[in-house]
Length: 299
Image 1 (cartoon, one colour):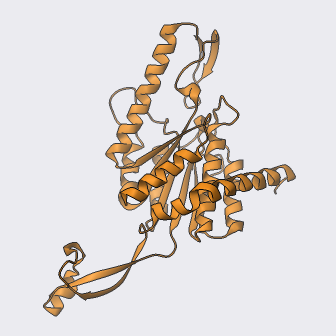
Image 2: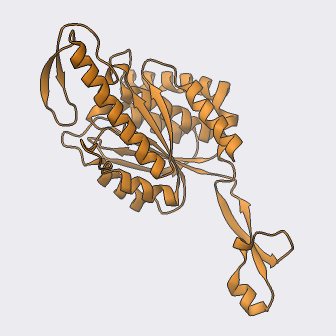
Image 3: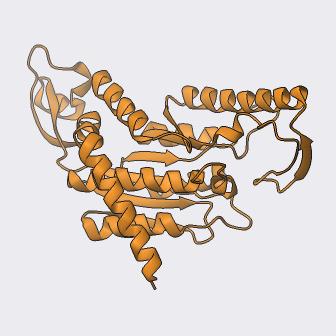
């Protein structure tokens, strides 16, 4: 049952997200992803200049002359938000946590899809209450997505992200535009091996138009110089006290963060998955808009 406070938060986030969609994202969203959804229309006789790869060899064999398949762009796209709600998403050293940032991004993408009359679905990964919300349209559905994003909590013993993504791939029967919103920090190895989630990401990218949006926090990149600091790893639960006045400690911390970031970049590059980096200490809309513009030029 919705509390009045939650309802206010949902409406407040909807209003902010709508302003962002109106200002920057709506037209760019559609331009960036148009043509991603296509459906078969008919076959016709081959004409000079037609793509050879679209030849329908079965019809060609029966007719004795070449025929090609024709496709039309689907009027509605299917957008899937796969949002990682694992323990590391709850970290934040600024006014918002990474999870709150993910919720705001998810709200914007959902409302952009709604504005373009597309279908939007939500899958919560690593959540206390797992959720697979099938794609649908309309404002009521969009508000449900926003509410679920705001209220999601991490599981006490979350399933590995690799397993969550493999399960998501089995759930998605039709090709879709998938936004994986995750810091991707789980299952990172300490050696040169690739992350455990890299394989299911590659498999998903072969079938779907996959984009990784990685929320981060400035304190994950560098330590503040503030004396003794008690730290806890949200994934392993390990706790340690560090002396942040030590230049050596700060340098080792920054080097480890850089190593993890490089591992994520390399795994996504191998899977040919675009990465959009967002941070809790900066507005995310400009970066997301630049990515959509880049996609539009590339397509």
